[in-house]
Amino acid sequence: MVSEREFIELALSFNESIQQPHFERTGFKVKGKRMFATYLSKDNTANIILSLEEQKTFCALDPEHIHPVPNKWGERGFTTFHLNHLPQEWVQEALYSAYRETLKPKKS
Image (cartoon, rainbow, N blue to C red; front, top):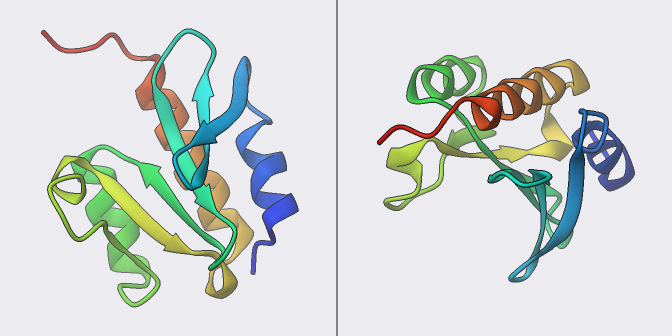
């Protein structure tokens, strides 16, 4: 299980990561770059923005508690993690993957 405090600490542990409001969620992005994750405290879930390949890999670990966001965003790699049911190591690795993707130059 990953608590809200633990998730926030993990998301902010990367170089130049910042926290900011994002609609009803808390967003995490790299300063001057795009968002790599959002957190919703009311149900202790996170949407982590993965490459499509990484999304498939993480979803295969636990399809009940890790799944694509059920809309067009999910088709772009946005992946919901139900933090009450997942080990910290998986969440940390997913956040790191999302952070690394954010540092890559945007495709034209």
